Structure formats: C-alpha cells, structure tokens
Length: 315
Ligand code: BDR
Ligand code: CA
Image 1: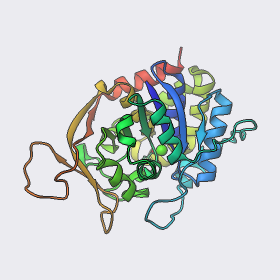
Image 2 (image 1 turned 90 degrees about the horizontal axis):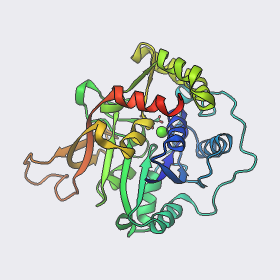
Image 3 (image 1 turned 180 degrees about the vertical axis):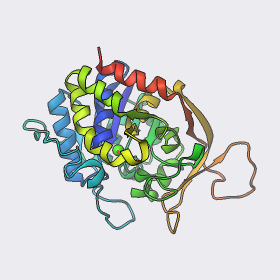
Image 4 (image 1 turned 30 degrees about the horizontal axis):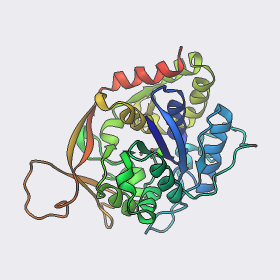
C-alpha cells in the first residue's frame, strides 16, 4: 500500500513512522510535516532526524506552521517534551533536507503520480490536507483513501483530550478538519473512542525496549516522557494514537466502522468537537445533509493491534 504520512512528530507519531518503515505491507512514498505537538521547525527537524537515524528514505516536505483560521496557541511540552520527542537528544539530521515543494503541492504531485493508489495517513492537524484541496481541487479523484487519527465521538465513555469534547488534532485546526471530512473522498476517522482502548502498559513498553532492537529501545526511551503525562489516566502506560491509525490504514478488519457524514464545530464552547450523523437516522435538513458519508471507528480489537505492533520489532 502506497502511503503518504502527514505528521507532527511527536512521540506517538515517531512510533507510527517506525511502524510504517517496518511493516512490509506499507510503501512509504512521502512524509509531510505540520505544526501540532511542537512548532513546524521542530516537527520537520524531527521527521528528518528520524528518517536519517532509522534509514527511512521517503522524501520529507515541510507543511503548515499554523491553523487556517485560529490564532497560534502554545505547544504541549508537558506531553511530548521540549523537543517533541521526549527530550532524548536524537541527533539532528546531517544529510537529509526537505523537498523544494511545500506540503500542499507535494501532496498533489504525489497523488497525481500514484493516481488511484495513494493512501493519505494524517496524524496531526489537518491543515496540509485542507491546503492541498485548495491548491488542487481535483485532488480527491486521485487519492484512494484518507485515514485520520483524530476526533472524539463520546462513545464507550471516551470524550475529548483537550476539552471534554475535542481531540487535539481536530482542536488544533477545526476548520481544516471540517473541510477534509466534508470533501467527497473516502475518509476513515480513528479517534479517541478507539485509541483510548489501545493501551500500551508499562510492562509492554519495557518488553519492547528490551527485546525490540534499536527501534524498540528508541520507542521505550521516548515514551517515558509521554507515559509520565498519561500515567494518571492509564494507571501506567500510554494510549497508542497514531500507530492505531496506521494499523487501520493497513488493515481495517480489527476495527468496527460506522458510516455517516461528519462535521466539526468551528466556534464556541464545543470548538473542535466532531459529530457524526449516522446513516439511517433521519433528521430532515441539518448541517450534515448533503455531505458525504465517512467512516468512524467505533470499536477495536485492541489485543490484536498491540500484538501486531510489537511483532514488527520483537523478532
Ligand atoms: C493526537 O494528538 C497528538 O498529540 C498525538 O500525536 C496524536 O496524533 C492525539 O490526540
Ligand atoms: Ca500526531
């Protein structure tokens, strides 16, 4: 599967990138960076450093520094560290640099080069994808599918993670997300309803660090910082957000999907909330009416995902 990875590395982004590099089903044809877990200069430097350090040869294109229509906010140093990668001191890339084309044009060029074959896996704010749609209105015809880590639908007791109703990637650029979800291309949302079910507990991470080679050791090192933040919620361990989106892109059979148009709240108290109008429920004329049905993950086989992730590194 040809994949373009749109990312804001980010600790769980780095885990998802290593997964893409390791999984034989994935052919990583490009990486685009976006602000989110850290400023754009940092997330781009991190993408380049990760590629150089782990021998990932996909081209990296720099993307958006801020949201389409919101003022800049701060960055979550308490979750991802000052450097976005858990303050482990990953050396900066010495050889690798970014592509000449900025992310929106790069996405368009890759989609047209691999017309009908390219899966966009987006695990940060959706600004680059929205700008790519603006740059190239014909883009949807060339993209096979879009898989997004983002959203929270209040299922199974899981709300938002930055407000009671909003998930971070969507909250960081709600206007972009609404644009992406209301576009006529197939979108699958892997939100907190399922990623909060995929818990990598401390023992799992320790085993990965011990038995998972260089990548496993690196994952264990960077997740200490992430774990310190999440421990209060998880009782020891982290949620696997971005790697769950990669897993869903590669094989959705571990997920239960619900179809229906998805809109994003773009102002007020519920800014960044994602709301689906499930197919089959009749409401008359609403703000969901006339928009394409997308797929929302409502359940996941978490033990299967966890086993498949560690099997990539533990040989
Ligand atoms: C999402 O927000 C970011 O902090 C993570 O990398 C993930 O993509 C989880 O809400
Ligand atoms: Ca991310």
